[in-house]
Image (cartoon, rainbow, N blue to C red; front, top):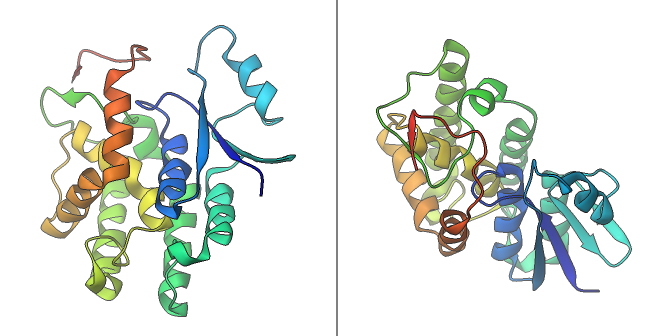
Length: 221
């Protein structure tokens, strides 16, 4: 296998980049990262040099380029089966894949009104729109259901950290940034994400970035 290289966007803002980056860290596979600041002159050209899709993230393994977050996570899970990025038990694995796919395909209101901004905090709790509030409720239900049914082996959705956690991790940061009140179970899972060493590494880098993209006076930097 050639050296893996992951193309990512700004660590403070790029939720889709965070997901496969966490999966790669959890896999134990060595990889290089290439960061392209987004929404700047030259950003699109730099992205296109790496991936025909012209978007971040993208994973390069030799001549192979994989441009989608969940597809990257699936590929990494196949490269590192012993990392158990998907649960070993069939039922748990099916649920974990469903959670990851639901996150990949949905929650548009939450994404649009509560964009990821790791270093920022709302001055006061942000009251979500009705659609975003429904998304928040659904995320909490997913977390609570997974923790209750499959989480006995550790603090994450299926015990140990896996792809389902990586896919939902950016939502945990949104809840923190916008001061969304959560159930005790959902908050405990968020706290586990924030304490996960790989996330802490990403967070430290995000805080140190100098780029500012669409930040408002509702958020304290």
